[in-house]
Image 1 (cartoon, rainbow, N blue to C red):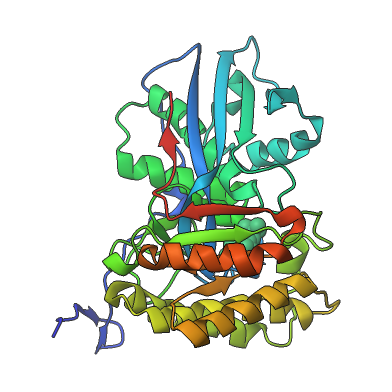
Image 2 (image 1 turned 180 degrees about the horizontal axis):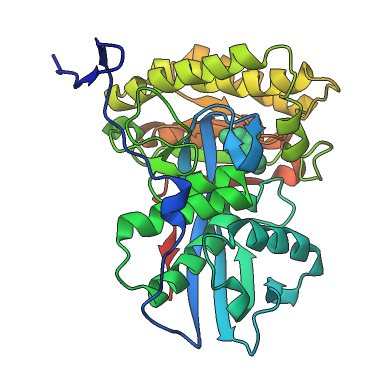
Length: 382
Ligand code: PMV
């Protein structure tokens, strides 16, 4: 039996059992000085999208999640961002150009400007440079796959590369933790797109070093879940009627919020064990329940809304039927939209793919789907 670390709480004079944890604080992400200068140059990184298994839905101020979450990092759905920087004469204001797929994209400016404002305290050099942010996604435009997670993660790692050029002594651990911390300030779930195949974000009693401020890789994953497959069925490629930002807000005063947050803690405890043991049945139960709970929060908020489409439900029913008839360990999850992520182990991929092609693709808009699998996080390209 594993021996738990015993911490003695002197004030209460009673022993409490806990796992030691030592997460970074916000202050530790404020640099005290830089040892180098850099006048101009560029970096290039890719960062992937991620799909949550235990969902983050509801937040406090400063992108602090109301409950912890865990996700699979994707491999092929990613954003590739080149960040060029050039020192400017004054440091009056932020200055950047933004190119999306090679074309200027004015509509992204407010989001990046806001991001820079939020992270300036942690990257005090931001006003010293003019930046050119040249970005593209590997997944199709308007596919209903949010690019905010991969996009903010890719920008955050690029900015950390610049910080590392100014202070080469920073460790890899600090680099990635701070990149995740910065990405979170751009778009909450982006902090789970920086490093690791399975990432936990949000303080959780049973997870040493877990933090509300950044994601941490979860390493104890059984080989059953290695190279797990995610086929994303594009059911509706349109704009969502209700944004995630509004959805998160509607968890304030939601009648079921407290029970939901408590459930997420419990499900995270359970799924960590399931992932470590390779328990496919347990995995399916939690992942599908989490997806439906997420959408039931939307349906029971005030105002209420529905992001699933009739074809989302058709697909879910087909998956359940196929699983019952064949015993194949396939399941679904959903993010905040109508698309369905079909999750399955690599060793049943041929059979499942046949099923998807024959029975599910007909429910996709223009028969479109994306084949992806678990990846490892952001990658430096140059
Ligand atoms: O990071 P946001 O604000 O786009 O919220 C993401 C919310 C979900 O995708 C629905 C769940 C999650 O944990 O990723």
